[in-house]
Image (cartoon, rainbow, N blue to C red; front, side):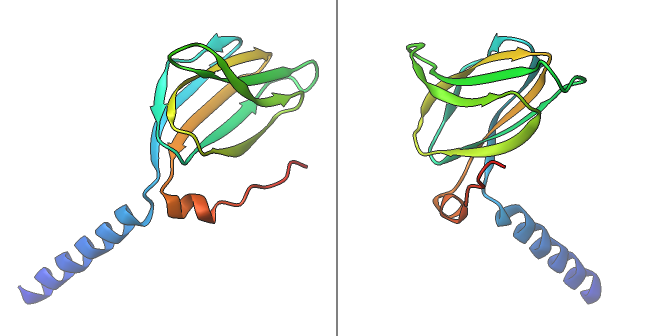
Length: 130
């Protein structure tokens, strides 16, 4: 009986460590193809955009991703312009309500918005594009 209680306690501790090890929280996820404006999402800084673009073609593709203010519709800036397939992560240090404006030709796209803790943001090191 005592062994069983110890085993259960150890499993609960392991589960608690696993759950608290990463405080990042996915706020929004968007998938699709072609041109689209996403739904508005609200996010607290710091946050990252984890993006991936795929296609059945490797020529004549185009992907343009803009960040737009979710309340006013004012363009906040271009996030990505790509003529090749790939993926990446970009960190942002502003909170607010936003939406993405996507212009894509022959591309399937997948976007995840993930909030980070300040400690996770401090440990984040961007990679330079190749």
